[in-house]
Image (tube, rainbow, N blue to C red):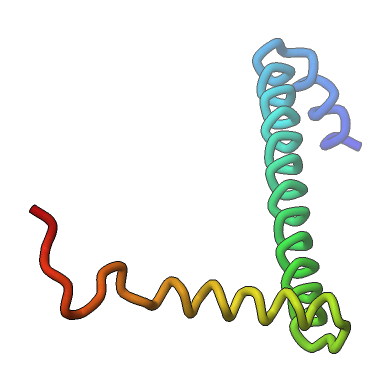
Length: 89
C-alpha cells in the first residue's frame, strides 16, 4: 500500500510525468522500428521462397525465361571486339 501511495505521489511531480511521456515515446519508436524490421524480414523470406519455387518450376514460361537469361549471360561473356581485330584509331 505504501509503495502504491508513493508511486501516486511521485506521479504528481512534473519531472516524473515528463520522464514517463519520454519513455512512452521511445517505446512507440522502438515498436515501429521492430515492426519495420520484422516486415522487411518477412518480405525477404517470402521473396526467397518464391524465387526458389520459380527456379524449381517446369512451367513453360519459367523455362523460356531461364533460357533467355542463359542466352543473355552468354552474350555478356563474349568479347566486344574480335580477338584478331586492330585497335580503333
